[in-house]
Image (cartoon, rainbow, N blue to C red; front, side, top):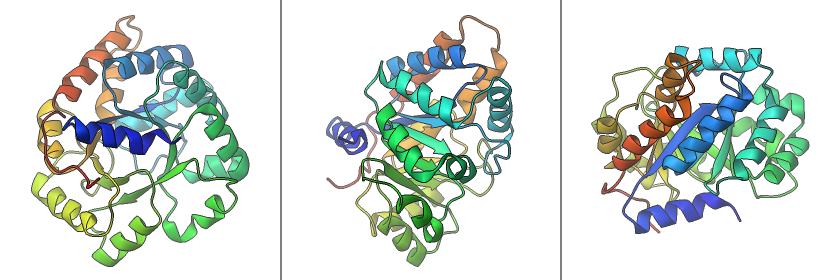
Length: 272
């Protein structure tokens, strides 16, 4: 059973919002990355986005670009990222979403990707540069429906397109909080709230918000208007600042615990 709907239902019952953490697989190497992710899951992540490192991460800011470069230099690729997902699944039951650009999946093969991702325990995939109009090339070759396809919306997405995107989405909607790349600043809660209201009119899926969210105060603020928040660049900056330190898993776990505490008590959960 896909773990994503169950997780959001459980969180809504507890009046909590999801803390979704993005980490690049294999940054700075597989062993350290796995230990860090396991510590973060134990510390309170509700959902993990496992990033597949890519040579041209056009949607990502400098912190995640550098994390991809470190992971690629250490030998990480899509196959090894799926293997890492299986190792993570061995120690946690939180939902796991593979976060990738389309080219690695295209090279891997659509059906093989689906089978191997599901066998590894993945619950979904988010393909940053694959619009709905072109995604049938991928999903038409999937032999089942066990893998949610997470869709992205943006501040500039008009209402009619929000409806079209939501119609083919599963798992949850990832709303990009602002124009620009990951890790950039200047996010407006009021503007995000308006867009989330528009999304609520066309979908009953949970709506989560990411890009530019990094502090407990920001998590608390956005938790009042959506069902979950995504933090990524802040974690990758912590990794970069603590390269070579044995305390890295503990440092990341402490940040997760602080961010998770800020998700409790917000309003605005998706309708059951």
